[in-house]
Length: 347
Image (cartoon, rainbow, N blue to C red; front, side, top):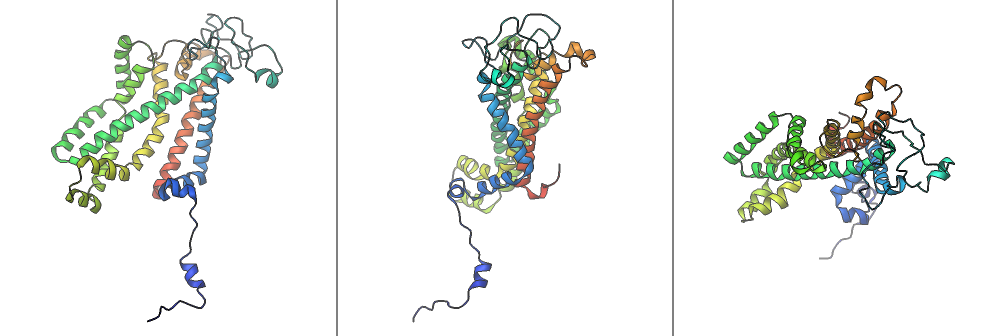
């Protein structure tokens, strides 16, 4: 019996079963990840968010070039101060004491030789421009590290609770409910205040406090998703053939349930930076003069009644904080829309 080869006009078949060429990048990242990346590049919110984040990344990487430290051999995160006067100096005031080296871009851009306080000085004569530029690195360091640490803790805790269920799940969830009764920022403030005298003023006490009270939300969300995923047929089949619980959990369940938690993590980076700035504003955290947006904002507390004259103390670090948080929030909202089309257009 000979094989019959289809003949005639197959245009209808071609139109019905259209083919799409798959590029090397899609093969490399996988079809699902490629769809997510393509969706982010087509969403206006994500484009704006990614643009803001990339601007901050460039500023952070080029901080030693944009704002050269006074003494490169010492901690560059310590902001240079032009004296010890309490009254802030306006923008454009020339440096008098502890003058940093003039960056290469300054003279061609401004036509001046003298290095000035571009954004003025704060109380205590700390240069605000240096606070804004070097504070970008502090924001990335604290925001990313705290978010990653809380995400890992929450995912592990919630996964174990959901996978084993029963009394294990009840006990672990009741513990979370007890911890979530406490206002997270107030609890972090108390813990950071307790740790600071023992560890010393640095990033560690505040970051430890934010991590200690920031993982519960991830645990609750991943738990709900795992309760659904673990009942699927391929999970039941893996249990039947004797696959270890740890392999089932970390190789099959978590990768299929973690996307909503990742969306929450992308939104939480901005919240972490805001929380860190709030604790610094209250005087908990780094030592005086460290590159931290919350700390420079705290210097404006004594000048609230005269902000019409000293507005630059609040505006420049405030704008840096607002746009940083806005970038991550826009990216997180766009990622949520790409992963869950039902949420498109909702806030």
